Image 1 (cartoon, rainbow, N blue to C red):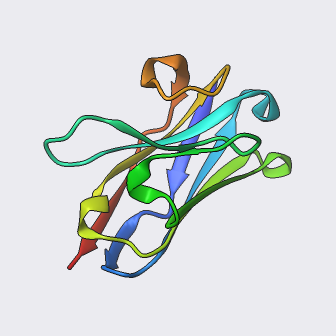
Image 2 (tube, one colour):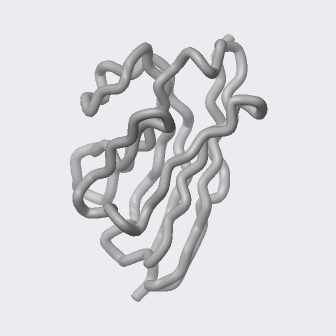
Length: 119
């Protein structure tokens, strides 16, 4: 059974940092493209970052967020710096067979972790 478990969310002040982790099990992690998505209040779910080998960042997070992966630990990370209130959302990690900006191209999803940024 495939499981993706996010952690590291919480409350941060504007300008602060958080590091999200997503631990995967039940799949050959190194074979999968990994992405981080988010869904803010009243907003559509959007891709924040994907990759590790090839990376994509949403324009709104370029220069502030960094995605990385550690295959030996079956874990993907999202380092979030210079956080802004607009970054408030539930953040999800997802695994897919190839890198894509479309959420329906990702097969497996975590349960999500809440990130709240106060001004």
